[in-house]
Image 1 (spheres, rainbow, N blue to C red):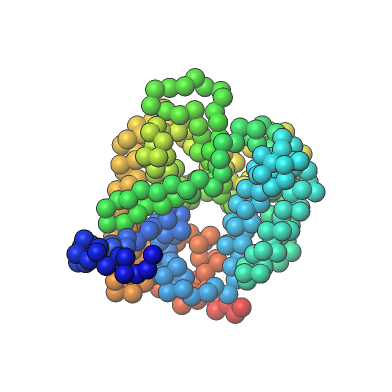
Image 2 (image 1 turned 90 degrees about the vertical axis):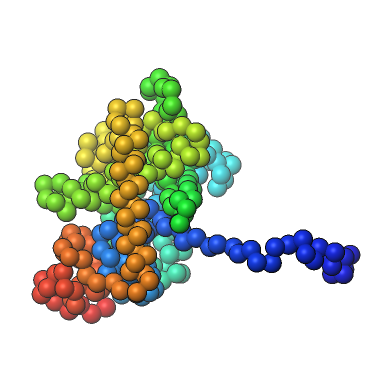
Length: 315
């Protein structure tokens, strides 16, 4: 067959048709990042500036990637001989070193040995504390969920789907929990910054529930935010610290109204992002972000939101 065999197709194809490429917005990488600081988001996520220190990226990535490998280890998907085995501390360290070296090759590394030791310690504690009860109930990890919202595509990745075996199956709900790991401590809700951050995370989980239903036909039963750094310094504990987990039981809340509120919040944020992107205008927020956002920012020494709060810092 040659190209001449396709000549008869001339006129069959609408040559005026267009492929509409829609912008994809990630729930955490775009929506929440912009809400935390539009200036930081614009310079680093849109303009592509490279931060002098990528501590926040390294810590979050190493925690998520090592946890994923621990789940795969138990499932025997990395080595069939490990199927059904809880990873040992040596296994955790092996996966940690592998992920760390992979990130280093991409220029993403821990700023010092203390941060590296903290991440490894937290992962070992999590593995010993949660592994025996969690790993056997894992349905899937790194679950990609998305929805065409007309003008854009809303995208999210759920860290973990866990089977819920403790409660009876309810109409309209799957016996499934959606988990999201946070490489931080529980937000300090005694101030408005911590309360706002927690509310953003809660909105995130409602949107995940919405995307899960679109894909599977039912809502998940629960959502759990796991704040990994609440485990730091607690080696040998036998129960999960109450501040490490924030749980949303979807059967006990007005799911639809909360999802509608969360989606409305996200739609408004997308509109703001697109307006700023159109004019490439990324001004400092009207109110200064929380210290956790500012402390790792290379733009903080020249930011109208924080004034002279921070001296100039050199790499």
